[in-house]
Length: 282
Image 1: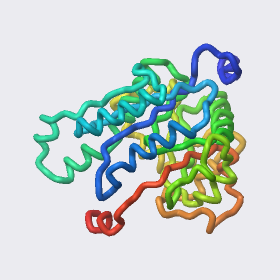
Image 2: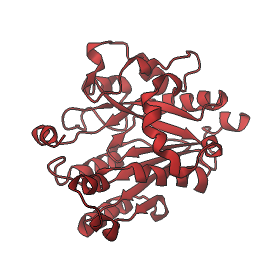
Image 3: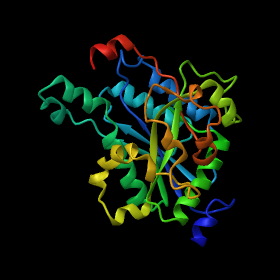
Image 4: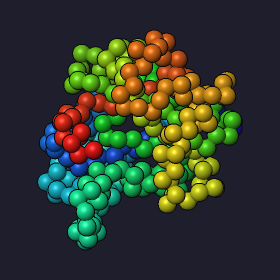
């Protein structure tokens, strides 16, 4: 515990938190052609540096070679080391062997496989104390990271194997006027009051009770908010009172956003969506 308590001090030699982001296929009309990469570039340009964190990226089952090469180029030109770019290959034979449109759509859009890859790389490959796998369009402010690292230290001290991190989404295109490396959480909440599905951070000790192939428990942990928070001052997570609902506007229910001050906040950047297409294909 003494080792973990000092892991975020300046000058530390080895990062103890692995922060993975997944870049997947752009799937019009669910997303505009360039929306995914636009958001990735926005994160790379504007997100602040986090002490004690190793940022890594996963290119996940990208079927279009031109799109793959462009995504890879964006990362490298932004200064991301090639060793920090993981690739989950698009398997042509596996894809062609699928017998339904739904199966093929899930193969192209699901990031579950990438989450397993990131967790395996973070916990087994690097021994990070905490590993978090997020969508590529997720942004974290500097003060939110401070809250998150306090939560990680608290969760580590209390022996928790995972902890939930709340996430909100913006409903319109993000702008540099209100979202950059100096933006704070309070400003963020004014532009992103809508809570969406939280993400989970995993402690390295989870490897003692499950294998990486069994990380499909991700969604079951998400639905059980009462035991997945790093806040040990309360038996129940402060964000568990809010449902894991993509349409849950917490500003209409509460203005204190108490869970943000405890758990930090992830931001899902804007995604162009054709809602009529979503409803028709539900």
